[in-house]
Length: 522
Image (cartoon, rainbow, N blue to C red):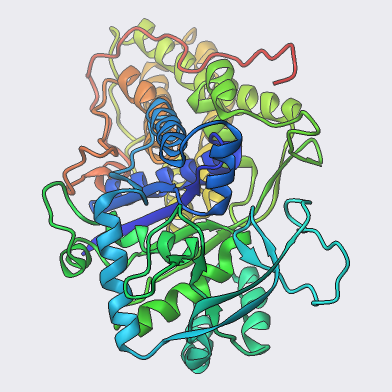
């Protein structure tokens, strides 16, 4: 079975922002973890490129909608390459094959009797591409998310018969694990309990979109079009645009990772559409929180937007990945604080983890012929660091299965803290000056180096660059967690205690993580 995971298909009204980078980095960690376990992974991201907002943004810039989409989607592709995101696919909803998949899917839904014509009246947010629940008599309502005036719409649309799937959707969202984290399920349950209403799937007089077959003048509503991008993305190079072929390449999805603001579309509308078309449902929908900066919502008007390009250039991949995955519980809202960011990176990565490896390797090389010291008792599973490594391994693996990146990161860090404490307690630099202690010093250094090896392996899904530098400094193979991974991995076996071979040459140590010095605001 293929493990298929998806980010949202990012709306290309503007260049990538930190929120989209955060989601994609988290999905990258999950994809790498699954590959390291030996799973066949299909990691999908992409761009949602239709709709009125895109058309208006392009017109304001003096561009055609296609030219605008080409430019912004190219920025996404370039940024993910620079971040070394290991996505297998990047789908664009302006792809010619996508139009054909949408048409084939719509034909199934229409054949199910779930397409109706009706009048749509209400207050509409162009930025959300969504009708809001404001009453008809509301005076000058605005979108609570975008803080922009809503537009009154009154037009004939095509509707999907969502109401027909009330009981099936209730049963689905009650299924343990379908909506995660659990706190998000209450929001969806409350929405569904109010009674599902048929929703509009088309717009009229909107040229920038996919025309609805057999319904002249109608264009598919951006959500009906975009959600199907997850299926179009399954097609391989050379595949014809055939729905059944796409489904055979990796459907159903194992998890859709999305922002909490689009949870309703993925946990209610999308499953109902799939039920109508007679297709399998995704296993899980994970809605994560939003990021603020120093306690404030980020926005252009406030001048406090964090540009992922700037973060990459000034701080590097490891630092940003560590802070976002280690400090913010994935699924909850988080606040980016520059001082805490700098402190965590320096304390955790440069000092606790980097310094542990550097000083232990230096001592081993100095006293044991530039090699891993000989080992006697330190390979035993009852060794204090062997037990700490076992605890860390169990905690990290269980957490990663649940997209709990924070706990996984803390497990690796706690093992490094334990190894530092052990090293300081044993004080090999003092013991080495005494008679008859060489064997004990060798055992102690071996245990710390072995703990550092397991720390590096546990970091592989989260910080592949730093993990690779640590393993290289220990003379160890670097596991492949990227798109070239073959699906056969011995990473789990390498996490067992005692894998470091005594007598193996240790490369000359160099700092694996530079300290982060941020003198000016990011």
